[in-house]
Image 1: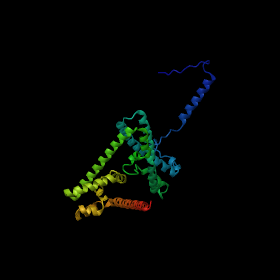
Image 2: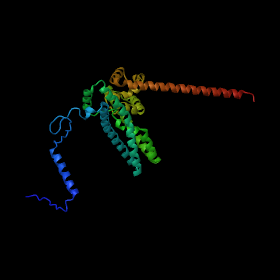
Image 3: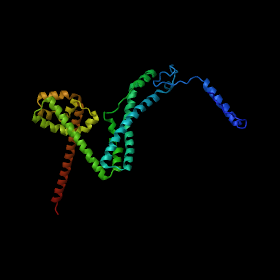
Image 4: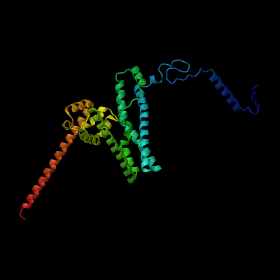
Length: 326
């Protein structure tokens, strides 16, 4: 089948069209005579023609700090997404419980983004320290290899993605967006959840102690009070410190909030020694809490003593006034 060529009469082939035809033909000839384009493969090592990339590529010309910053930004993007995903769950929870309208949801979505971004501050600081430590003393080639082999790195605790919910920006937004009735309703549910978590943690701790030490019913009764009080006061700090770390020794260490003398009154000598050995890895945390509690008790006692002294001085002054002749 023959291809019919368009026929142009002298009247239709204007100078502008003639010039355009010449330019188009010149461009076509240039494309056909040019060498084939190469496309870099995803691994960045070879192109589609099978040849190695030219030396001194894009990364080679870029300063190392810029490459480190790019790597941190990649990791930060994934971390920020995790935090925003969690805040999406929180907003959905608030919306279900408080029946938010569309305007309230939009305002909370905006606040959630701000809280997630603000919570990333500590993450970025930890990331900078991590990369500085890993790349310290490394030459350019070694540094590039280290960066290339760094995969997903987690900074912060196991529950770092939930830090956004603790930001003051988010808490202030709840107060501004929700009505008083909605706030009361939400806080009631949140406190109920917290107490259920505390009770569950105390029960698991007591069960672990019983399984490891073989407690008598009376010992269980006494230790239940200790671990329940410990969970009520310290569970939030424990989870900030270790996250949801349900290792057996960690669970049993909840009893270590009490003084050793108090535990010795409940446990036998062998039980006490076995318990302290099993929870030795967590003793530093609880030792700090016991010292802090003692310091607070001493400070409270001093304040009480000063208050009593002032009351005594006032009482003496009043007596002297009463004894003055009228």
